Length: 304
Ligand code: ADP
Ligand code: MG
Image (tube, rainbow, N blue to C red; front, side, top):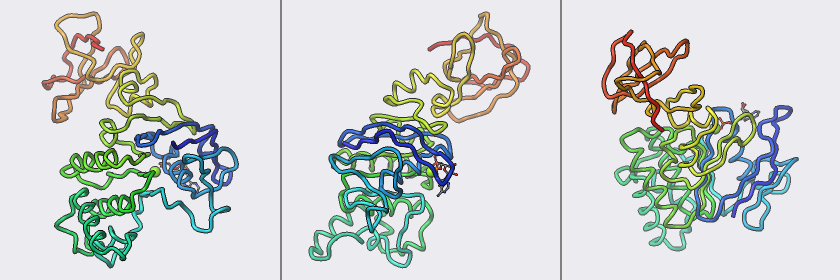
């Protein structure tokens, strides 16, 4: 189990994290979500052992994770941290990068494992290509494969799919998280994209204003977001008193109701239209299957 206990952290005088407490059970995936600057990357770095702590402790099983004051080389063998920088070797091939940490004493084993991991990140056609000639998304995939190579017990992923295009993203996420499950690897993934984690993480924490403002399963947070910050992660929403947080898709346009709004704009979003309207002086968003003309008065019903 990973345990973060009463952790507070400052960069010189700037406080970034305050009284952070959580646990992740072995083999589970925890998602850390929060706006840019909310401290997600900092938290992952601390868990990796990159910083010394004044307040709080981090434990992996019975071992306390310690910072550079205590470790000559930052980090731990059993943890892999895939950062937003990748740290690859540009002048060597994809296969060499992925196999970098694997022992040369067992060349066949090394080759087999490298091949398996290259398949997980779907880079079979690029195995012999030098990393410097890859796109940003392809580099990110190499970094993911390399992190898995030595079977870490704990994997820390920082915005792991941010540079991967939508064609590849869906299958890649499934490959990676299925691989983690199959190998019982514990994972903490920081992201601002719900699609990275909703179908995969058992638990989720929301970081805001230095603190954890919510912690639950993705489904419970989605069903009952409690705060606008949490709701905003899941999609377009409104705060309509006295009903509270209402997602755009929970507002239905009906023939008759007391709740009336005037349409100001319709935005096509693929599956349907996002209709912007004025409810008294408040701007609200409604999902609807058709475009609706400006100035149309619509009747609304909340279906939760
Ligand atoms: P996130 O990953 O959620 O975007 P970060 O952990 O990168 O957030 O940053 C949290 C806050 O700490 C930000 O305000 C950022 O500017 C600040 N910060 C990050 N790294 C450093 C650093 N090395 N020195 C000083 N401030 C930093
Ligand atoms: Mg970050």
